Image (cartoon, each protein chain N blue to C red):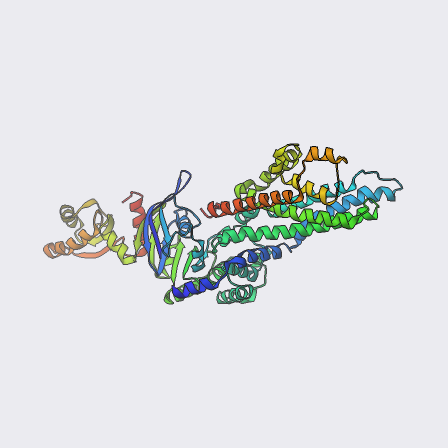
Length: 275
Length: 310
């Protein structure tokens, strides 16, 4: 017993557990199938930008889009969200489907290691895909003469997407631990209600959405004002500082992660084979 | 090592295990029961993967549901086959060993050592989809032993193993027990468990039917309803004496005219009275065959008793 306790005390579940899971998931993601999915996701926005901005010019026409940056943000957002949807919402479900849950959960603090490790892997993969998609889109938009300060745009959006991936990753993994059998459906439903509907309501309730805060950060960092008049802008979007938005995003992400950790350690997840 | 007090687990309205009282010390234990009898539920309760609906579970003296660090002292080889087609045994076992808290280098070394012990050294870096069922079984066992646990829990470990694989697995498990470490071997196939010579737990319909050494259960069975077959030269005379002197529930004389089949409330009573009858009457008893002659018969008799078919 003493010997065993001694061995156990020399072990460090943290950070080895989450790092082991993360490294394993990253290694698994290097399969042909998953690389193909990542390439398709990362290529979608640049290809669309090419079709929208470059092809018409090559055909001798002209392109007149008021705010091409919005197009970039919209398309890369879709890719970013899809990537997170694929990897972070299915943390529990993929383990149960793959019949690996019992192996990881029967490790010391294995459920926590599983959640944190897979979430970290999902964030890394999503950031990689998003970075490629965003960079490709900005480069093509610049080559087409659609944006004039590409480095500033790229820096701003990379920062915004990095924050988005962390917060959305936590929220989607939280939803995935609660609605693990219909994780993707639950996440899409949440996105439609919160990020499309709630974020657009000009009232305090939009504070609960992630998109409102991200949008505000981009507007302030990129010095966009829509409408251009500052008073009108404040009347529409409120007058909160950058730190307020960052603080609320940190709060949403932390609360979601804490709820996910509580759920994953307190719920009995069983596949049909286990019972 | 393991203690269950009045443990019941319900899945909605379905009973997983029902009012189990159990105390297991160190050593080898065979968990026997038909498919769907509650073996895996019991294992999941012991490992803290399930919370009992009623009762208390203690592993190494504490509640495993709230103390998952205990799992560092346990190695589990589940019955389920992981679906990891593109992953190699080295990658998987290393990951699971590292999750036990070992550094990356330590985990790699331990994983290779465990896989080598399981004679998988030639296939370390092949994707697991290319493995035979027996090879996958060995990999599953390797991930259970790589962190050198005190207690090894194996759920149907002989599935898919060829005769050589079964022999090697048995030898390994016997060595494991001889080293003073503990083992719980769950199976629905009796002879697989018998080979490791454990004390055993017999479970069916979520209820623990019997536990202890084979001798303990035989003793319990001797005082329980049993069916006995006696070959004698005077079955009718013997039957009449037994009926008057023992708690007999049913007597049947076989078609050969030499066999007496007796169902009794107490096999021990028959065993004690039979020599007296023989001595007094001179009846020749050629053979006495009772259902507790082998572990297999113990198992089937207890199952019959449990089903109310005694």
